[in-house]
Length: 446
Image (cartoon, rainbow, N blue to C red):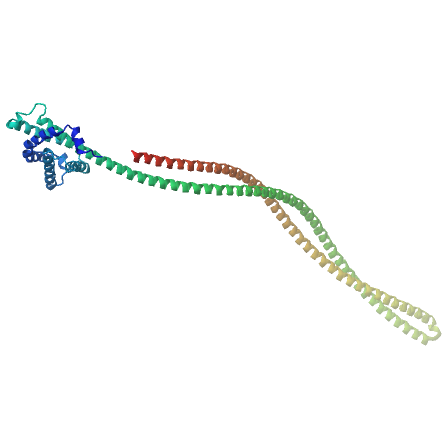
């Protein structure tokens, strides 16, 4: 807040009497302002640290013109609102262009020295100077006026600096608050989603725990079943081995039976041949008997012709005829029996051939059974191996499931810890947001 001009003037001792002296100073220095400002701005233009604030000669001439008008108002004691407003503009311009205060104060000191020299040179020439009390010198009043003018510009410089700093801080605070709010919102959203994920993880862990328990029980059951299968396969293998032995014995018996059947067939064939040979002999005997009977008939006829001398021959012939008759009957009986033997032997030979074929088929079937039993034995051994492997794998799987269950339990503990951490971070986020707002409020208040 700017002070009222009278109060500001009073602070520098510029009362009514002093301001009267200041007007006398003005009468001395105002005519020399062009000279003073020309020399000053010549030095400014020749000094790189100062000339950099003036882009061209026109700005330099404009600044010189404004400075002359401002000082002319000051040295005529024209301390109106326009004067204070112009001093404020000068200070703010200095801040806007970045003129360091050290350069401004240094330049002002050089101008003050020039003005002091002008007063020292002009005072003896002024008649009113001889009547001026020693307590109020022109140099003293000049110093007070210059110090007031410099202080007004510096105060305006600081006000502009403070306002700019406040604006920057306000913009920075707003940007910071906006960014913090955004980060807090993102963090809260992330924490919410993370908390939801943790809750979902808890549900998954519960399901995984139940599933792991079920799978573990099933794996144990599978291992037990596999072991039972292996034991049953061992028993089956023993049974198959026994069957294999029995089938081998049956095959051996079939081979022996086939051999015996072949031998019997050969004997029956031999018997059939012998019967045929006997039949041929019987046929021969029958033929001889018929011829003998015919001879006996002829002998009887011849004996009848011989009369009494032929009676003995007739008896012999009769006996021969009777014998031939019995031989014929015997041969007919033998022939019938031989035919029956031949018929039975033929039938027997046919049956023996059938038996041989059956035995061969039985041998073939037995061999097929033996091969099938061997395959079953190999399959049973293969199944037994797989059953043992399955039992071992099931045991390993049960161990792995147990390990997974332990990991699931540890994951559940970690999930609980995570949820606690999320809750803590959420609380700290709220605290951070409150403290940031308090900090920004303190900055704005400052």
